[in-house]
Image 1 (cartoon, rainbow, N blue to C red):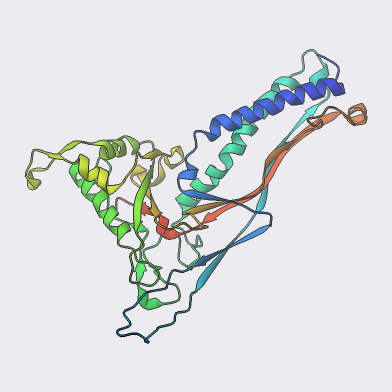
Image 2: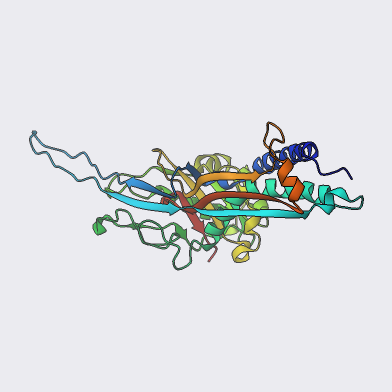
Length: 340
């Protein structure tokens, strides 16, 4: 093995950087969390987001002069970032001894940490999805995030409620394809029926994506790509042309989420919705204060200043760290759909 010199360390760490960056890019291109998550970059430890409720309503004024005045109201939600990271420590001898394995270990660590940095946001988002029905997992309106009683307007109880927890809509193989399609139609109508905070106008939501487990994925592909389906005898039997219906419902190609494998018996799935107006919040939010980076001994410009460190170092350490968090956003932009 070569002597542990500044030039060796510079060349070695240059290779570590390339491995980490390549693995990050490879995994990042195969992730699904961006389908339901809005990324916010912040310069603060605590990011506060304001949701201005769309309560303005134009009303008939008769012959004029009967102007009604409204107070625009807002809800606030904040996200506090925390540190996340890991490290690698190797002995000097693992680089200098002929039978040392320092290069192999550092190379493998570089690959794994690149993948972990890319995957970290999805890991957080998957946990939010799987625990969004639990006590303490609150949306900004004070309700559990997946709930049947979200207020349309948190400041006006008479405006009604909406649900982003839809039950008794099985689409798995426990029901026939025509029943499953009927249930997707029911989900569609529930999403489209949600009102704006003024309690009058439609929010104009439409289904966008279906997130499901690997076991449920083939059935979802079948449902969203079918041209004809077999009808039950009670529905008249024979085959029904459903291509136009499926297209009009707006359910795009489903997304397989490996993190949902075995979740609630592989019968639960999530529907991500889209709305006409944009917002600072998505269905879920990933707040990035400091992107993950690896702290190396050498910079991009060379090994200046490393000599003294190497002269007295019996161990070398590499650290990767970032500051971030994930949290719940608009409950009307994602729906948990259960078989029972």
